[in-house]
Image (cartoon, rainbow, N blue to C red):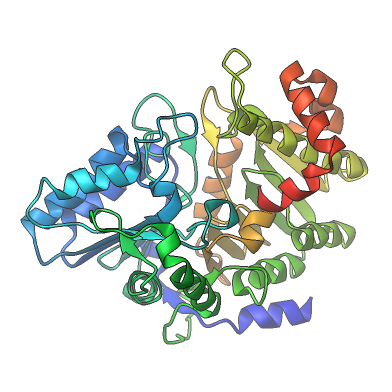
Length: 446
């Protein structure tokens, strides 16, 4: 445990004024703050997300960016999204209707252009996507695991619940913006999706491999700052792939150093082996562990039984089976309240929270789903917050309270449905997957 504390304590840090660190509590607040920041931007806007969707909310954000550019042509605006995700339709939608089509249509309507760069983390989407997060607007970082569409921004009746943090910090903003520019945008594998002359994926396969290799070595660059007792320390961390991944190492170290409590949020219950091992060790040494996970009906892949079933709709049930097995194996710890599992469910809304709190002193703000896919395939980042003087305790306690208000405490694994309780079509799918041992493979890419 001492070695793990040593490794985290020796990470380079940026000093953060706690008064300039905000926590937002709802998707609508996130949308409002993002639009306000875009409208008031004076020097730069860098938006990075898995996708900027061709729907009402996505078009609103893109319109705001274009209007800002027309008002101030010198404004440095760059948008980065996943290359593959932008060039396919939604699951079950027309193949011809893509987000890239929207970017191109917008570019033809305005004098001053807003590039939307497609970042190909791997040659195929199934083997890795751009899962980096962070919206840098002037000297402010708005960080969330959310992408940009109707449900994430609560544009209509439903929302997808996430975490939302705002940090006013020029050094942090500079470090994150420079990474986006130098490590992604400037690479030949990265192309503007709004441009009609963009290449086909097969034409840039070699460049994609080079990009992934360079990203595996990349890091945020900034001068280490000594943090006073009136400040908190923040460290942006990036990682991709399973070898020498600094983000994965930091997450494991964070869990290993816990002495009193661990609080974890994940939307998809499928921990990487090393995370599961650290949680097991923490419980063994007496640490109280709280896990908040979405109910299967709050999973973004859930398909209501009254709708046509598609194979992708089996995922929430697979995650629940993982959770039930974990709860059954830890029934004694659940009974003693050393392990608390909370299922989040609020009407027809969905759950997308990620993050870790340790001993009310260390907080990881991240888009990392804490699953094997994040661990091995996707490009991920996080901001580690070290709050040695409890400046942010009240803000984070309020955030935890906000998260837990729509949860149910699991008192026994029997509260979770078993295979026989699932719709017949789901039972058949899971039995088929299990029979051919495909579940082991699926767990590594989901």
